[in-house]
Image (cartoon, rainbow, N blue to C red; front, side, top):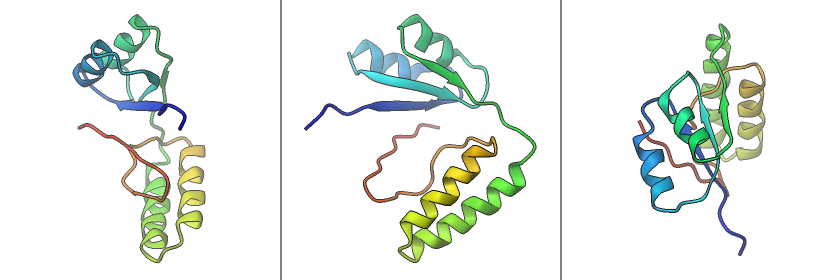
Length: 109
C-alpha cells in the first residue's frame, strides 16, 4: 500500500502541525483560510503552504454544502462530491464536514 498523503487544514497557531512535523509525520500540503502562524511553520519545514482566502459567496457555498449533506444522507455520495467541488471552485474553502466513502479527513479546531 502506498504511504498516506496527509494534508493539514489550518487556521491558527499551528501547534498541532508543528507537533506532527517534529514527530516526523510527512505532510504533503498545508491549507489555511486566513493568514496564520501554521503557514509560516509549514514554510519553515519545507512543506507546501496555500492560503485560500474567503470570498463573499459564502451563502451560495452554504446552500451547496447543505444540499451535498442531503445527497450524502440519501447515499448519493458521487453527486454530493460534485457539489462540494463546485463550492470550492467558487472560492470558499471550509474544513470538510462530510465523511464520504474512501475519503478521510483529520480536522482540528
